[in-house]
Length: 480
Ligand SMILES: Cc1cc2nc3c(=O)[nH]c(=O)nc-3n(C[C@H](O)[C@H](O)[C@H](O)COP(=O)(O)OP(=O)(O)OC[C@H]3O[C@@H](n4cnc5c(N)ncnc54)[C@H](O)[C@@H]3O)c2cc1C
Image (cartoon, helix red, strand yellow):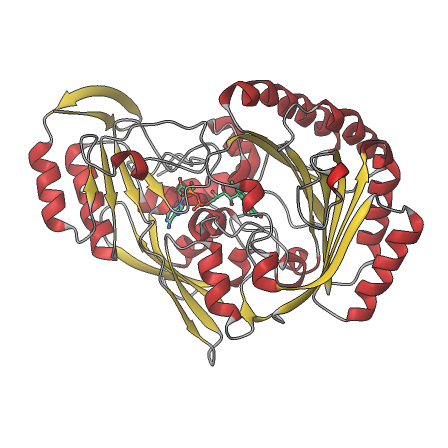
């Protein structure tokens, strides 16, 4: 006896059904394993990155092929149950998993096939960024993606995808050439500029609304396997000069450099003097992909203008840069986050930051500013479905991270108050990057996209998922 949440159009009600026969049929149809609550492995299968999310799906279908995904969707339609889709399981709001319904788990669909001559890579819908980085860097190539290696390519790409290479090559979606998608009626479609172009447009920013992407095909870019790296750290009372210096450097640096500025606690790393371990403060991370000279000059300028408490400057393999923050963001932490876009690190904004950073409760919590300009801004606002515009900006992410639920409860208040205080400096309506939205109500999603883009997405949704089967996400309601 299993409990499934039954979806009838927009109306959901929970009822009890005997689905054992359905599950057995699904098991027989799939090559990957199927877990129900009594199965060994079920508890592992229902874990997601954010430990604050504790949900119990009735069935987990761990797919190994496109055909498995087709079978899982057919099962969900027969049972009329809720469907969630799990890529890398990183979404902090926990959209990968549902209570009582079916989780389509792509965690074994991680194949990465590189064609170095054609400069293309085909990536399984459940692959992690580290899978892609390892395979592509073997050829001195890369796709622009995020900063943490264990993030899923699936969710990250469908919402945009920003990281160290965004200034040079744009978002992940800007390098996407095509995708294989299983849509709600079970058809397997190729979406590209020349096939289902409306679907292809919607996938580039519209999130998981339009079906299950079983593979992505990206254009690859040349990225030298070695990067010049610098990390600089200042104590809390140096926040204003440190952030102003970071702002000035970011305004002047070439596209061969990228930087992340923010507030963190000093890591207990070998390069950090013991007395500074875990000390709260401000950090500036500088990655040089271009000429060594420019990076060296910036390092010198930082050390002379606002001498840091400590720094670490060294060449680093690109694949290590991509994994550098993995441990600090390990699975099993409790998370609540907010992200907004700001135009500039103005003096007024820096004052808000330096007022709120010292109030955090957990040493793991961070504030990060990602620079978004260059190639990011060379794509038109409506060329993709990305929520938020393409003018040069910073993504400001306030990430409450705690080792347990009690500390997260306190940190949630800090994240909210900080986010509220930054709102007057925000571009647009506030939280607009759908990959980091904490609350996913219809009004918020509509205002993230803006009415015109939302309505266009809603029409495409009406065509490919008229019953809104894929609604556990930043949901677009189908229009007809
Ligand atoms: C530690 C950490 C670091 C991060 N760093 C960055 C960063 O540097 N840059 C950045 O842009 N974002 C970053 N993010 C945000 C990240 O982009 C989102 O959390 C994203 O949702 C993660 O995708 P996922 O596949 O791992 O997550 P999941 O939780 O598995 O997926 C999220 C949603 O995406 C959809 N989805 C996922 N895969 C598929 C698929 N194959 N087909 C259809 N739908 C799918 C589903 O709706 C799913 O619910 C970070 C998040 C975390 C937790």
